[in-house]
Length: 139
Image 1 (cartoon, rainbow, N blue to C red):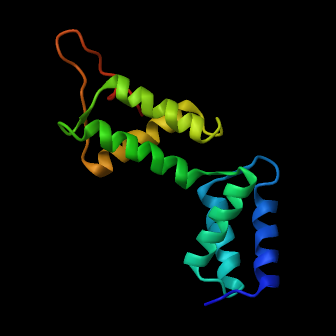
Image 2: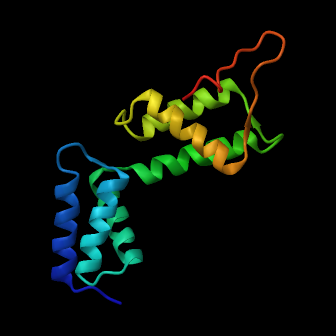
């Protein structure tokens, strides 16, 4: 389905308005934008493509994309033995923080990344003779 130029222009302006104050589109804002798109007869796929395009053009951060980058990083870290060590996890936190331009606080990032690891069956390398319980400490 093709969207008329006028509808797309209005939708693009709406997206810009949602990210106007902080140049950041979190998951709740993205869902709200998608709902407006559907109300304007724009498919979810088309709406996502328009959101992505506007974000790219205006330098907005999409939380979903930042999470995807962190997930890919953790997947690579866990690829060899199914485990992520503390340094790799901390690197993922740093990547996530940079990708979100600091919009999510570190404890929340760690919690999300831990949940991501659990959802994907990746284990943490912790403990050992002199190791710490860094992963278990994340709540």
